Image (cartoon, rainbow, N blue to C red; front, top):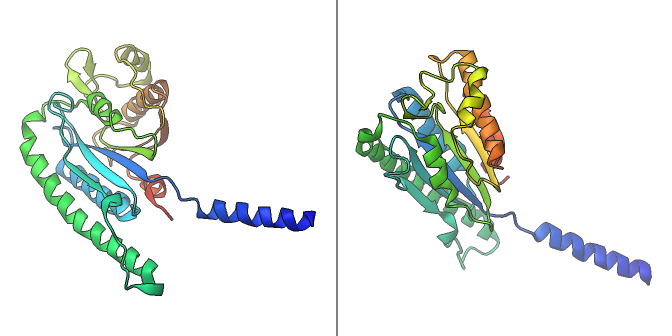
Length: 251
């Protein structure tokens, strides 16, 4: 009798575990369109958003895009936003094919939203040209941190060369921070942001004009800074998008 009870409890536990759904994803993406980013890299950022984020999103996920430029904080705006959890994919006439019908409806919705994002992004590149004289990555991250949701899996994706430039003498990674010796000086000039609970992925795109020494110095700054902010840096890469796809995918 005891063995039967243990078996029943085990089956119930297994059933409840298998039925437990993953947390919906709250994906906040920051895209750098400032003056240091060339048009090919910006297009790579856009294509990465469409193919590696939006195409991989689940039916309960939500996604938004914020700008990185000189007005990241002073003129912050949501460039694009979608919440797939608000869609109703149920079809009472689908019967045994309900799962397939829902999956197709979600795929159709993604396709439609990709087109909407593409238009919104093109418009934003034009409307925010007046802010291309600087790059306030930290300001953009501060804005993104406001969208933290404890009931979701929070993922912060940053597309940028990561060269903060808001002050010519004190915060100018374009002409300064050329080696590891300067990292501590720069860290002393910035206050941490609360990024606890955020998974963070940084993709710079290919940076042909940046030396490996400078690239690694900038990378070291952000690795240490994000750690001080208590965020979880999943990846910092040039053109490799595998970690991004794995983090977004619901499969």
